[in-house]
Length: 418
Image (cartoon, rainbow, N blue to C red; front, top):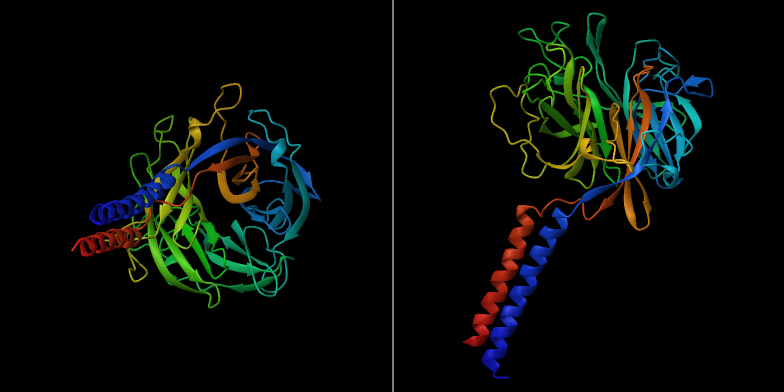
């Protein structure tokens, strides 16, 4: 082969290889999907070790033991505030609306303790999310207390670290902007801080345990409106340094509006960010749960990223400010999931998500629904396998590196021709 021809072909081949890598990376990111494995359910009133199992609003997988932690949002009204240890046999999950509960086995219940070492009194705490925190001296737990803003009183939201026996280790330093002040409605001029029942729902931890993120379900009172039919809401996502316990950055996640008009019109409806799950240090799975009276629940899982998003930690209020929210793209609307008989998967109040074990070479995801201790609801565990890559399209810096490679190859080819 003539040398010039060989050089041109080599240059083109190099360009083709890099271009192919770019296309492959893009294609792999776009290929991510969730495959429904099945579900298991527990009836309200199920008992374990003298406690009523219910209110499970957060779940996390312990890869070392193969078990799970699940936190109850019981405000010490049925039993003291607590979390459970359990095992889930995903092989027994069924794609059916009457799946049974054979794959769910509780093995432990642990009372969460105050800094003074006692159980929380009734209505003094509102646990919502839980994550296992790796550490050099052994694992501990992080958990969120949602806080309260109501005529019954104000309670500050908290992010807490606990030992596996429930003992209090420390509180993280939550910024003052989250503390409820002003009226109990949160809708009066000058009100600030969390809205009632729309606060610290989300918690996730980086794989190395060095970073934690918490998020509000809806906007703080000073930041914007709560979600409604036709109205989205800007939730704050706060990034904490686990070693120092201090917030480092803060981002905005814009929730969807309520998906369905309530029936009758004017009755209760809500939508919010109910959980985050870290994929890496900037990419997350975000779970939004919409509920409308007379319609029911709508659950959506999004891929979201802080890449390119504004750090709003310096903004006391988001109202009237210019900022870039976190990106989000729909991964799955659970309203489209079907059982083996073709029926739609009946959805309860899903509020928790975790990565589960790898099964048949595929990563699994497990969701849990909070039954609100209501006889008309149930505790629901739903499992999926992950097909493809969850990582979004490479960030602009990655594309820039690939483009630099293309340009370098082109320049080398031209130099060789000369």
